[in-house]
Every structure is written in C-alpha cells, then in structure tokens.
Length: 372
Ligand code: SF4
Image (cartoon, rainbow, N blue to C red; front, side):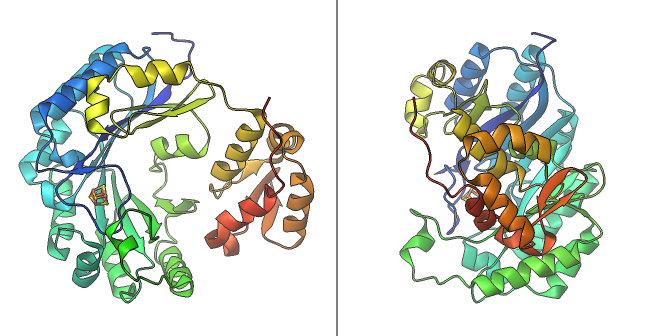
C-alpha cells in the first residue's frame, strides 16, 4: 500500500431489504437475508482493487443489518487484513433487523458508528412511507444501540410528507434521545417507486416549514451541511468526502466510485455484478477523466451544500475559467443576498439553504462547452 497516497473512503453496498419502502429509489432487492454468493463477490472485488489507505469505511444499502454476523465479520476482516481499518467505520441499520446481541456483536467486530434508518417516530407516517418498523421499535433500536455501547449514532429523518405533518413533540422526543448526528431528507417522488404510481402532491411550503422546524429543534448541533446536523467532532467524515470531492471507492452491485478524477458505477444488477465482480473497477479506472467543466460544476454543486462554504480563491481558479458567466451569476446572487462572503469563503445564506439547489443552478446556468 502506498503510504504517500491520500487516504480514500470505502463504501460497501448491501442491496437487500426486507421490503421496499414506498418512496425508495435506491438500488435494492427484496430478501430476508443476504446470500453468501453476494459476499463472495464482494470479497472477490475487494481482492483485486488497489490497496488504498482508508480514511473511512461505510457499509450501506439496502439494509446491511440483514447481514449475518459471520458475513459482516468476513467483510470487515478482509478489509482489515488487506487495507487496514480506518477510524470511522459506519454501518447502516434498520430498526426492525437489530437486537441487542447483534448490536453488541457489531461493536465487538469494530463498527464504531451506526446510522439508524429511523425516518420517523410517528406510527401513521411510518405506515404511509411503507416502512416496516413501528414507532416503538424505532426508539427501542436506538436504546439498544446505546446499551450495546455505541457512542456515535446518526438518525435519519424524513420530512415534507403530505398529509402527515411533522410535529414539535416528535422533534422534541428525538432531541431528548440525544443522537450525535441527524441526517434529514425531504420527501421526493422518484420514478419507479410505488409513490410514483400514486397521485401524491408534494407541498413545498410544508416542506420548507418543516425544514425550518428541524433547523430550530437541532440548533444546539452544528448544522454543517444542508441536511446534516452533528455534535462537535461527530460530523460524518464519510459523507463529507462526497461533499468535498474527495476520493472514495464503491464496492458491490450499484456502488459508485470517484478515484483519480474518474467516476463510475458498478453493475446495478446483482446477477451481472456477481458474474464478474472484478470488471467494474478495471473498466472504471480505464474510463475517461472528468473534464475541467465537469469538475467545476461538481465542485460547486457538492461543496456549496456545506454551510462553511467554499474558498473564494479556489472558486476563482477551479470554476470561473471553465463555467461561462458563473462569476457574473455569483456576483448577482451575492448582491441579492442569496450568497454571502465571509472569511474568504462564499456560502449560501442560512435563510436560503432550503433552496440551495436552485441557487447552484443559477450559478452554473450557462450552456456547457463541447467536449474535446
Ligand atoms: S429506504 Fe432503505 S430500507 Fe427502505 S427500501 Fe430503501 S434502502 Fe431499503
């Protein structure tokens, strides 16, 4: 392993869930457990990738808590033996598929951060979303994780669910649970989900109001990214890699990678992936590097999600020369108060965080130059 190489993040995808949630467009297949053949393919893929030093390890899905302890252990052991384990090792878990013994076992094999797919503690909203856990189970899984000794827990929350408004008392309960980290998601209707077949009308005003409620309820935490809040020193290093355009390697069916200015995605089909788990990495590393235009767009789209903003100097050298009109667009947004400048950085003003995507699109709105 090259010690000179900057450490990268590693993401391992477990594309299985007990049942498909009504809003979910993530790549996953319904199953009650994870077949060993999939684990063998993961290990096969891991065996052939370059031996990068790791900054983070994130096992996500799908529902990684469907893995047996033996399966999880074989993945962790392989990474430990061949790459060395990083400081932050996160496992995504769902409330219905964990118990105290399992959680204790996670701890003992080296998982030190849990991301719990809580989404809500309201019975009706959970049912509407097609989640299979109850509100009691949501809270219980968190308590069990604490009992098992986890001191770094993130909770996922969904807001903007039409007809099921978020209530202050729900946010107060979650605040009293005292998690280290909260990730929030505004409901959207994605193609090929069961919601996309229904007549669901999203209410943007409701979503904005609830985003504001969340911001206020967790104002004692650091609001470090558009959708993420954390206690001091407990932000997600792994997710920050994505937002800061740092490198990560995705392993498993449908996993995405960003290495050496190349982006690729593994086969989003379990059969095709398992037939040749070594191919995606080879093809990905041989693919075309991103153009300066694409890098500049990514830098703004990802980085401006961080509430700390982006250094003006880097925007000037990395973005302006490659994005026609972006300097003028940015000046306009600064003068109108959508963007603010402080400490040699540019960031989206707090009041406009909810509409970050539209602001970023305004900055980069000129048509792209042709490739080549
Ligand atoms: S939201 Fe999570 S648990 Fe539900 S189907 Fe998607 S990946 Fe599985």
